[in-house]
Image (cartoon, rainbow, N blue to C red; front, top):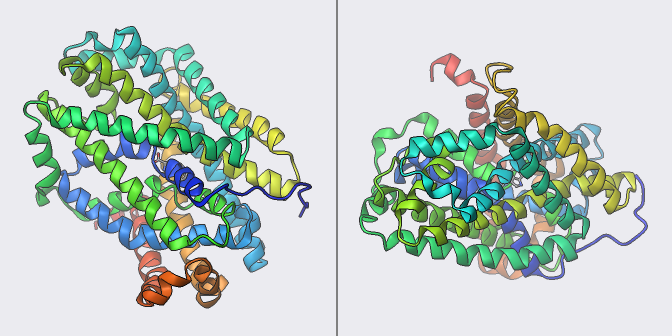
Length: 461
Ligand code: TRP
């Protein structure tokens, strides 16, 4: 293992860490994906199940992932190796680094659309269509344009690289401290606009009155997958951010704050979007196109839409940027810690490689749209492989690692550092974490994996 010449970087403050980690968690998963998944899966019934998943599996695994990072002060590969001395477990960390790479390569493509839509909404082009079918055609025209899609993708990658290049404190932390409050404000603004629209009540009802008729076994599994993606869990992003944390700061309370912020933002985004979608009489179950086809029409129909439209896409781009930097940071930390590279070199090399790997994803919406592997285009394949297989597998392995390889009692000694007061007051929390990390989390995640690999479907469950 190469010894880095300079001392390892650290967060400037606990708040800096929370905002950076919440910035990683809050992203396209909350604002783009959560609303359309809720729309497709029965509204609040889905939300209730999703909340249970984040509390029962999300929180214990998130605590564990951050703890591994803080204990070892290393990237995922170095962290697993340091705690186990095993090549297999170092390989598990390696799978995380690879997943980060792949996720960023398609995530930045969608983030690029969001940036492109800022321009579209300022130029007024976005608000020319009164009906969602026409807006969908416009969306297709844009994504069919190779120069448009690759141009904005590249532009977004350059922004991401710039922040990671500037370093943990000067880039990621400072950027998050400025961007996250702006994001919160803008989103609350858009939510108030939604609630105050005439007819918004139907949207609130959709979010508040559970319709259990849409719920099946699958719903639980979709909800759990969403919990992993939105909390940036299962591939070492939270581990890496945890590795810049001081042992004086409490892991459980930080994890809880990150989770609460992430959940709050998903709910606020849901309220903002469904109140306006229902108030303008559009389809809540429009699927992945909800934000890009339906919202422009919503903005066109709402009073003040020319103003709220650009704001919405600015906040979406900010959310995506603070998530993308956490993905690039994982690869960067690996090359800095393990290979002795400088941060600058790692960012330039791997930012560029990510861009190259992402090009087939970007082309999946135009030239390569008919090229499929296992029935999915390249974009769909990378998305499926990472979100549905690599993340849950990573989360399962993290829980198993803590409980049975590192061993619960040793992990507990580390967990108590910085959280003495919390555990003295609530010793029951220790038992709870033990039960969840040893049994519930691994077993439930295992079920998700069976589902995503289609084995349950084959068995007819
Ligand atoms: N959580 C982010 C979102 O909801 C995406 C993300 C960032 C992510 N880092 C991650 C997802 C690591 C999985 C793993 O948009």
